[in-house]
Length: 367
Image (tube, rainbow, N blue to C red):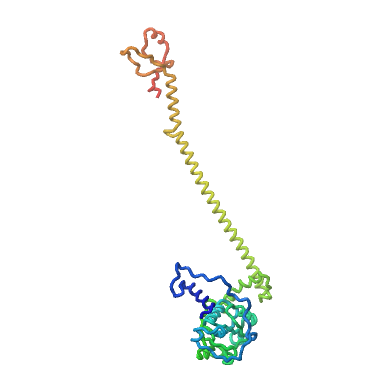
């Protein structure tokens, strides 16, 4: 029988791999959705000295095959995982999740070493033991927490807590004068390996803080911590405050530059629009000007029409000729005073017009 927690883990693996329950891809690549329900617990995990243990029943450890087949609900497989769990992070949580899901019916016991043991065998911690106990207590995969856990597991400790398997990553852990503190657990067939989460560890987090020490010191000074609390000297405190002011000025200058760029961009866009409108209007004006004053413009036609009408108005009307043999004047003429040329006329009018000088202007001469 598969526990709900194990089924949830398998479902998460399927969603990550994009495969179905039998390794096949899900239709249309859409992962299956889980039912809406709460998986969290309402209370933190209890400490081992707060849990009543029934020692009337004999302690018989289950084998790996029995644990994988599934045990009765009243007899879960008791898995133990220990560690320091300083600056509890996702790598710790994932390791405990793997330990919880090793078998279908698992009861996870987590041992947390005390400050004294940790400082002697590994080094100084950021969090004290009570803070580390509390962090592990509130991990959702943990069923029970052992305070002041031993550095090396003894048969007496395993029997006291009725442990079936010990979960830890398979990398040899050399400490306390031993090449691998889990060597005897592996030889006894009680070791269940888990995988480490790459890219996250307590040492990595501390390295980030030490590398960017100035950044975090300035950050906490801004948040109201004193230089004494941060163990910062007077000179460094003034230096951090000066750096903070410089950064503020740089930020303001950067904001002004960005706003200036936005303003220039808007002006350029508006200027482009104005230039385009000016070009359109200028083309329209030039077209109208040529249409009016060009070689074939309306003004020339108007002048020609006016000229023709003027000539028609000032030219004398010709009398209709009744004789077919009457010679027609080659062109209408207009007599100007003081003209030296006189058209042929009748003898009666010749004497009258002799004293008058006239000009004959034909249409061809006028043109």
